[in-house]
Amino acid sequence: QVQLVESGGGLVQPGGSLRLSCAASGTIFSRNAMGWYRQGPGKQRESVATITSSGRTNYAGSVKGRFTISRDNAKNTVYLQMNSLKPEDTAVYYCNSVLGGTNIPLNSWGQGTQVTVSS
Image 1 (spheres, helix red, strand yellow):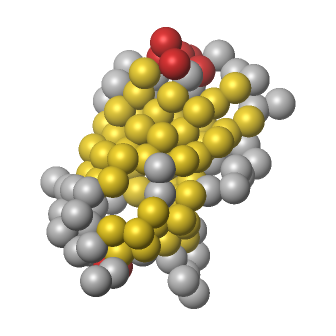
Image 2 (image 1 turned 180 degrees about the vertical axis):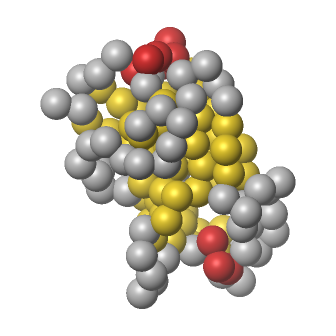
């Protein structure tokens, strides 16, 4: 049973930065591609960024150049560094392992972490 625990969200002003963390357990983390997703108010959940087991990354167009996904296999953790945040980035952010080479999630969702961008 894979467990995913997201953290690091909060309230930030437009233009600010946050770093989200996702700790995974119950899986051989280093072999898994991982992804970050978000669900804004009244919106469907969408893929934000993915990273393969070898470190290859992919981003949604709306966050490219502002967000960076990374992973630390020794800590079974994937990160999302978010810079130049905009009000439209407000959402609950989730992580999940993904089918390699895609953004198709493989497990049940965790509780997510709330990110609110507002002045």
